[in-house]
Length: 136
Image (tube, rainbow, N blue to C red):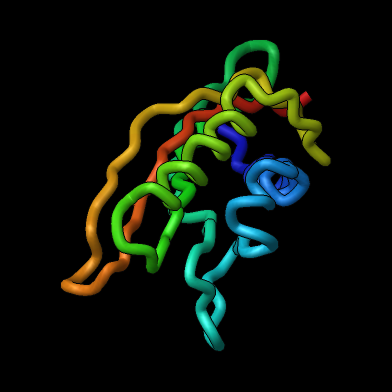
């Protein structure tokens, strides 16, 4: 197994989202690797947990990465969060991302969970994506 491409995949996913004009129109520059500790924006995107499984074969190292991208919105209702989630899906599904190490073989949407957080107007969508990377 190779976990060596994890950082490269995360950086490529982050850059793809940060450079997308449609997503920027919905969340601005509020795309984070870690949620800010100061003032939290009214809507933001955050890279979340990741699970990795070996996908090595006789041709070399590789891994399946399941990672979460979260959209959090303080708007009443899910409209703003779902619009951002749709834009993220458009950016990532079947994306042709260039990694600083390895090669992205495939990137697919797996599932999403949309929920109200607490008793306020906060809404959260956790989208899970699955990527296969090869260490070439």
